[in-house]
Length: 93
Image 1 (spheres, rainbow, N blue to C red):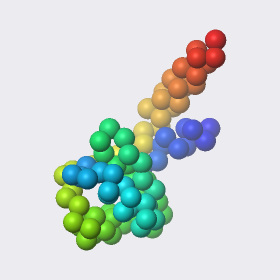
Image 2 (tube, rainbow, N blue to C red):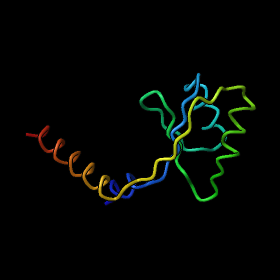
Image 3 (cartoon, helix red, strand yellow):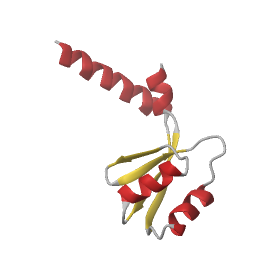
């Protein structure tokens, strides 16, 4: 159940010229950041402000190439969790 809830969260996907540096800057600023597929995945939390996040990157002179909002879809989240569980069970056999 926790995997289903975690996969149903809202994120911003951000591409920059310097993703490693951007991830470090945002993590230091208190954001929950993941790095995958050459983009940052930033969790939207209760007091999240996209303007503040972008301002943080701009102040560090990190060029922002793209920003996309990704909302977790319950159906896709359930399918993803079930697929992962099925793959894990197959690995155990």
